[in-house]
Each structure stands twice: as structure tokens, then as C-alpha cells.
Length: 418
Image 1 (cartoon, rainbow, N blue to C red):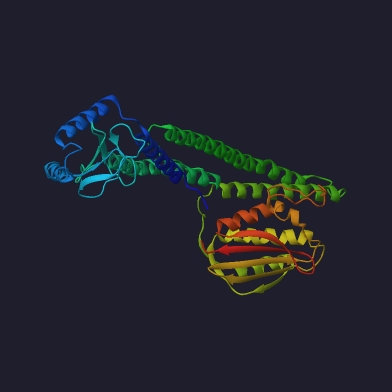
Image 2: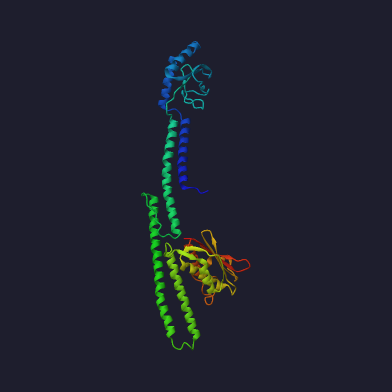
């Protein structure tokens, strides 16, 4: 279960209040009466000794006096002898002072509820308790204070952590690729300073990434001009009939460079796009059939129409078929498309050597080359599969590499209507 920060802060407030109330209660329970309080108790004891009948007078006289005093002061009263035996009482039963007690003061017990014991000059005890205590006891004041602080601290704790939650959501957006994610700065405290620092860092990252994209796109564009001139120069080069292998190798290298530049430009454009440039109905089976004929692949499936960019989807299919043709070791290539939910499922399968489990995710990384792959005839591992995944995700889908039963590889691409 996820522990929310605002609950931790709020519970910390409540814990502090509980501890404070417990300490105050303990201190009140065990504290000894102060000088002024002792003087007050002694004074009342002396006055009660003068008002109450003497110990040798009849108990009926004592009872009558207690009844008059009870009505006069609206209190429960009881008189005990020095050994704690009850002599007379009015109102609810009151606890007797403990035999070890020597001085007047409050009786601290569960039954006392605010009762006080007054030691009379002759050794007897007068126990008194007001029938209607003050409307607000000191402990109730503490409870009300704790409740007020608890109610007031919750919005404070929630306000602090809500800003942190918004900051976390913007961090997640930035991590997901939204370089425009920013946090609204509220207040002038440490959380606001953190939000300000995040905005500055996000702005710097956005500038750096945009500069890199611009440089990559500009460099890729500028490279096309010398490549075009090289191609024309080869065509105009005399004596080509004597070294046809050289002309063919140079032409192939130029074509590979041209393809690479085109993929770089597409990758850069996909990074910069917030939404698809074109969004129209696309018949996936028709595109798959056209590209499958070029790659000698067996195409099956059902007509599926989704909304998307037809040029990007054609590039996705072509890259998958070219990859299968390159690594299928001459085995047949099977391609199919079927409806799935609000989109489509595209499958490209072959019977080649397959992809090791630890490499199935790495092959979608730009310019990743598995260990042992040669630079010459095996060249081609670059941006092809990385573009496949980028295009699929631009269409609310994804691409993954799966093992095929009986040997080989199957690339599964999910596409959803954008």
C-alpha cells in the first residue's frame, strides 16, 4: 500500500497533539498543590471546622448542617472520621480519603470526578464536589484545542503535499518525453523553490534537445547535396566499363548513406512531432500486400482500416520486411494483419536463426549492433527497428520481438486508431 506523504504529515501532527495531551494529563495528575492552592485548602478547612458541629455532638446535627451547606453551595458533601468511616453525607457517594493522606487537596481517582478533601482541625475529613461543575473543564479545553489544531493542520498538510504531487506528475511527463512540462509556482517556500528549479532544469533540457534535433536535421539535410553530386560524378565517370565492380560498390555505399540520412531525418521529425502530420483512413492489408510483393512475402489477413499517417505506416511495414529478408536466411517470410479492438495487429514472421531472448529488446535501440556482427555484409542494423517502434507508438501502439514456435522470429506490432 502506498504511503501518502500528506497522511504521514497529518498523523505526525496528531501524534504530537496526543503526546502533548498525555503529558499534560500526567503532570496534572501527579503534581503537588502549589503554595497558593495549599493556602486555599487550609483556609477552607479552617472555616469548615468552625461551621460544622464538633465531633462529640450528635450525628443528626452534623447531617442537618451538611444538608443546609449542600443546598447553599449546590454540592455533594460527606464527612469521614480520621479512620475513613463515613459519618454523614448528602448527595452522591463520595470516595473517602486514603488512610495515608495527611493534607487537604484534590482526590485523584476515577470515582472522584473533581472531588476535594478538606482536613478539619479535629482530624475529620470533609469531602466536597460541586454538583454542576464548570461548563468547560481544563481537560475539555485540551480536547477542544487538539481538535481545532487537528482540523486546521489537515488542509496545511494537504496543501504542501498536493504541490509535491503536482511536481511529481510534471517530472513523470518530462520523463515520458513531454519537454514542455512545467510546474505552476505557488508560494515562496522550499516547495516553490523546488518547483522553480525544476522549471529551469526542464527549460534547459528542452533547449539542449531542440538544439540537438535541429543540428541533426540540418546535418542530415546538408549531407544530401554532396551525396547527389557523388552520384552524378559516378554517372559521368569515364571508363566505368573497365571497373564495374568499383562503380557498383560506390553506388551501393552512396545508397546506404542516402537511406541512413532519410531514416535520420524521419527519426528527428518523429521526436519533434507533437501529433501526426497526416491522420487519415489507411488500409493496412493493402499496404502490406504491396510491400509484401516487393519482398516476396506471403501476405494473409483481413482488411483493417485505421486512422494514421500512410507514409509512416508504409515505412514501418517496409522496415520489418527488409529486416526479415536480411536475417531470414532464405526462409519464407509470412506477413498478416488482423483486427484487434479499436486497431490492428500486424505480424511479420520468418524461419531464420531467431533473436536471443536477451537481445529482443536491444534490437529496437538506435544503432545497436549485436556482438559479433560484422560491419560489411551484415550492415543494416541502425535505425530500422527503432523507427518501427517510434512509428507504432505514434499510433498509440507498440512493437516487440517474439520467438516463433518451431524456430525463427515473429515481430508483433499493435496499432490503434489515433
